[in-house]
Length: 297
Image (cartoon, rainbow, N blue to C red; front, side, top):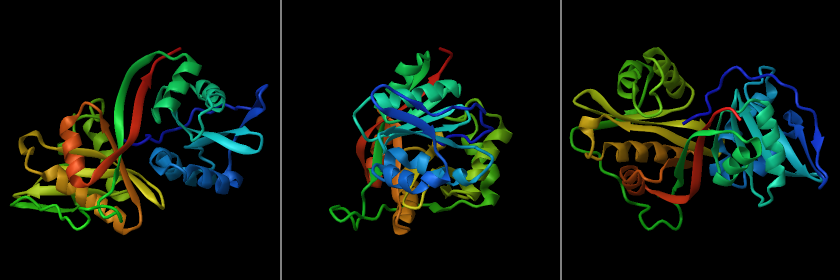
């Protein structure tokens, strides 16, 4: 799942302070070193924010950032992509998040995801009606880590399957695979193709094909220098229970690890089939993740 870059909602937000001494201001490229250090503390939760930092150098403002400070110390960061909000904090205090929630409200936030307590803070402070909220587990790829007892375990490719990285020539088959599936329900075929084009060309996608038919795939939805988020894991219904999703996710995750990137993903807490796939592929749960679609206040 990505943040869906789109034309921003352009609204000014002046620096604000609170009686307790916290203050909020817009962040720019001069703040980049401090932002990178702050976001590096929990890369699984900050990955989408880190992956979009390059837009600080752009006048297009596709991704905009605000910081909440306790004195001179950065305490929380808000990213807005269009009307989609993502809040990140490594502190327990609620006030920095509440101040940034007011920015999200002014930016007409209609979607948020990330750390559950950050999602809670945005919803509570903004008073938005929750149209749909889903709870997930956040997991990290641990196979190959120094303390992994299964570091040398290789996930076998099912008989008759070919696992490889996707190319642009696969776009039509990928579009057919994902059309009207979870996460793409509201998109037309051309829109699905556009999303997948970006994943194949700008990010990466791995696929499994059987008898020449592409039947399973997984992509990165965000990448930074040190980490990546995997999403879009899908197998054609008639080809399930053959281990195809496991080998695709495993191949993509190994490639990321070989490049020095930590791999993360999130999945619904009630999705036992996904939990089995990711556990077998080498993932361990490290926390919770929330996704919320919001209505008007």
